[in-house]
Image (cartoon, rainbow over all chains, first blue to last red; front, side):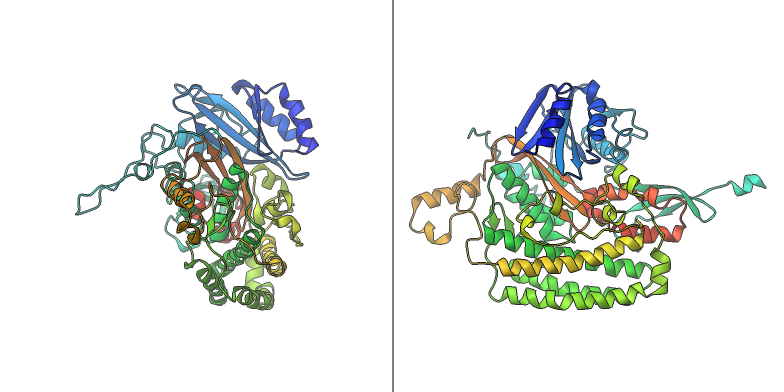
Length: 171
Length: 392
């Protein structure tokens, strides 16, 4: 791990609730109220690019949703992942558009796929799914179903039934 | 009279229009001939790959990456297997890494050739398309020899490759890379000295370095504006740190700069391939870890243990430790990354595809602001979007 990233982590540690290191990647969990502050502080430290903004659904755990920000500093190269959590009943997270304008479409996609709303987003509407679509496809409780085969009346097995999911293993 | 001049027209481009390189729809608001507002409407090619990948095992998911970005198929597969390998904490054998780099760079050339041909035809230089597709076909033939498929290869495996290269393959690659730089010079003469090409691309679709950073643009779009960021140099993967190559940068940030960057990238790719061919030494092409890769055929008749491993891998798949990783590669369009979250079971609990085209397309309204309608076509071509990658 480069010393620079550790310095930065120290600077952001006041904001972070939790710090995870896995395979040389640093993830900081920041409370929802302070995520914009953390992002702008990271941006000042050289993390100029918002490489990705996405979300995870931890259903049925609460707080159910995690919004993930992947930041990249082009030079000297380093990466940092910030996360913040939102509840399942009313998922709202402050928008990062003021800090990273590129977050605009990415937040729309998270809204589209997970139903997480971004407070302060200029134009929060669906981006990939049709405007009249109901539900949010990447939520864990949104089922993936197969369509019946025409004329045969046969419904293929969903892939999850062909090779069932195993229970998590501890190494 | 002033009422009349202030009126704007909303023009709808696409979704089915050859210049949009896929199914992209643009709502363009015009003041006379000048564009004052553009709104890209995407999602026509949304197939839910991310959701699909959550329901299949890690090995089954290898089929999806080349279908997401169908012009740089080998690079795409490389990105996905790298992410899973990082999750497992393993590294492919050296020979496999060298082969991946050779195929990846061939893929980059093939993708740039498609871009060159199609963007030239957008400004009416139609012979380019034939030349470029002719060269691309030679690369497609190489892929077919390796994997049996021209496009949806499924050649890479977690921990290595499906099988070794066919006999005589390095010589055939060398023949292509020896031939190509000369042909690229020819193409460049054909376009760089072409008045129409210069007038249609120079000073068109300009993106300032500030905007590149604001929108997170990467790849030739970012480098055309001078952002010195190439994943192969910044975060070397799969052995790229050993190779000697340059990252071309543009200064003007217009469509012409992106064209020059891509032309130079193809030459640099040839250079990387030539170095890789020298590093190609005999050895295994997949890891010797029975919990990750299938046991070799000859073991199956002798060892009960091998049979059990084979059965478990096929019927259940691999079980990476719980955790989350992000692995990125430099695709022809920019940074392509897979963010894979594992809960310790045989299926990823989330796969996120970080698409370069998605972020680059977001900067299109800035690029074409106060340009002419006809230049939108050039702007789209210069971003080199793959709509499968945008919509996933």
